[in-house]
Image (cartoon, rainbow, N blue to C red; front, side):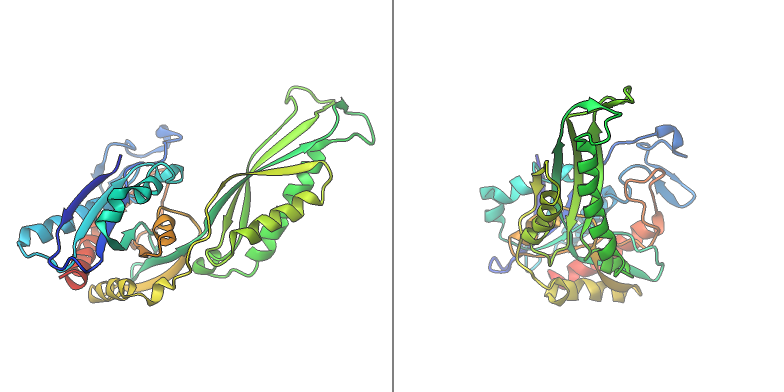
Length: 340
């Protein structure tokens, strides 16, 4: 279930702006390792501490307060401004933003511009503006052989086959990663991370299993067609007899819009500069709900207006209060320039 608030605009022919954030957060792995209760929202040492302070309840709070200030001014904007809160981004957005964009409601909103989440820069003089991100391609690799005694010299071992496939994909990633020298260029690299392996009985040392399986999280650069990534997987799999693959989830290709050349980017960059902060465009490694808006051909940017060290999903996730306040000021300036 999503949540929606709005300030109606005067000119209904102007595409609306959506300030978007997700309500869910990732679980806490080890609460005892936190300096403060992870869901306490404790303010200490000039920081707000807790899960979601960077990803992305703080962004939602900034959006809300900026929209609230606009409403209090009593001046109607030229274009409509929406505040949208969605669920399930951390599990892919398939039951959150994807369903929202497929609904008749979204078509009725006539949204043309979107601000969603970005990344803290770790640079006190700059903020990042996300202009593209990689597309998830989740793959299950399977290999079959024959159950046998571990002493067999020529055992038809499915684990060995699985290792060959995985090694090929990892080598592909390493070769591409070697060319990436900046944060932004990392977002343009194909990656293949093995997230799960399963085969045989861990309590048995001398039995070769009949089956083996791996789950691989592949991230495809925005400019690379999904078919190209699938061909890389097929090449690795089909080179090993007895191996096969299944696509568990795949983000479809979407229009290639140079978001850095849009009026949305220009307005946001201008607001950052006004507050003495350099805006830096970057291509993101991670994927977020933005891709669903890009699939609809919308102008959309990822923007978490923070200069602190990035701590998404980390133990002791926190946000300096100065970043929270300045981020609010930047968004207020942006809204005044872009919507009024």
